[in-house]
Image (tube, rainbow, N blue to C red):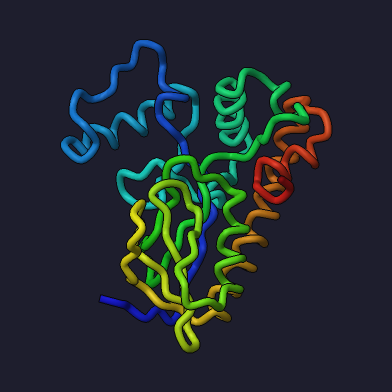
Length: 225
């Protein structure tokens, strides 16, 4: 059933995979995520705490995504960046001209306090451009909006944009509709939020001794790719 949304928000969120933060002797739950959600939730919080990343809550229960706006503590932000940089084989990856240092995650489509579309596997903060392109789309044919995989698709019908449920098939299923101007507003607000996040990143990176912290921060926040 197609649901008309009158207001939407795009929440920039970064992915914190617990394995990047867990102590070497920490074992993950034996069951898969859907089979043992509470155990995996505890594992996520405990793994982050192993690296001193504390005081953060996920986008929704049992998610691995944290809103970028939650990183208000520079110490915690630095510990998070330490773990990310280690996975990227050191700080050289931040300034390597052949590398693309963008933080994993993306933009979560929300309405009425509910997360409708969460960033998925292989998504990153640079996916803001996908939502900007979606807001400008005016064709009746479905067009992919890359949020990772599974992704969503968009099409234009009369005066509204229709978005599909997340899918990986060639047959998108229309699920939500929104006015283009409302999505435009959400994109602009998300970009402003990423600019604030980039400033926090810049300050923390400078404290970490990273060269050209301003440019690196913009890249990490998906604002300069």
